[in-house]
Length: 252
Image 1 (tube, rainbow, N blue to C red):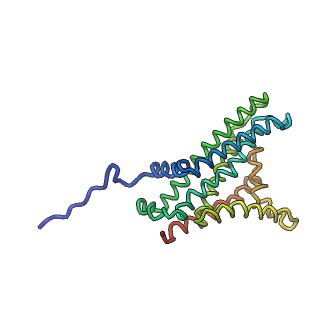
Image 2 (cartoon, one colour):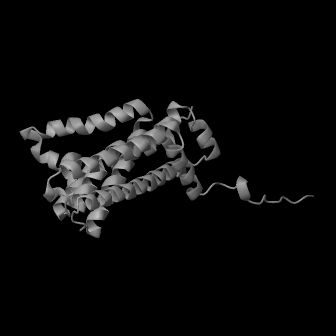
Image 3 (cartoon, rainbow, N blue to C red):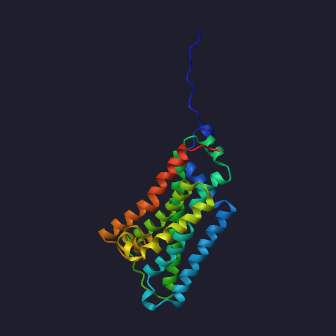
């Protein structure tokens, strides 16, 4: 009578890939494609143009490092989240999701890796913004004062924008609708917020009002509450819906 033996867990290249390896793969997906390359190059170019315009035509009182950093972060917060949208939605539009989830059946780990890759890329973009801001400030002999707290706020501003892009991509699982709604919904809400009837709600739910001060000044407790409420609506809710769709939906 033979005895049953337990198979040893796979080792080496056959072992289950760790979260760090998955994150590196997802980061390569964002930067290693032709679309990703031109998107990143365009973001860097827009950042350089924004800093140059401020240095050339900005008022003297706006030639501080804080102002240059805020201007540099604007293109990154607008354009770079498209890479986050494509990172998730392209899995379905290009029909690679079946291969991805066959290699890594735990879908939540894949989404976690995509989120971590988005954070890494956004922090790298923040370093580029700081470099351009320093160059712009030095060019005009401006004020280099910048508190660590304000730098942290700018980092949160950039990172949450990138995560919001991933959330919209996961929620819709289609590139074109996700990109359109990512820009159209906030713009539509901003337009509604300009009406007197929606003035009170707009202070809490309009990102143009609650999030933009993060690059300009240290937020008060009330401003943080408004920013958190806005992020709960535009980032957390789409992310939860996207997680449900990715983990429960059929893969084709």
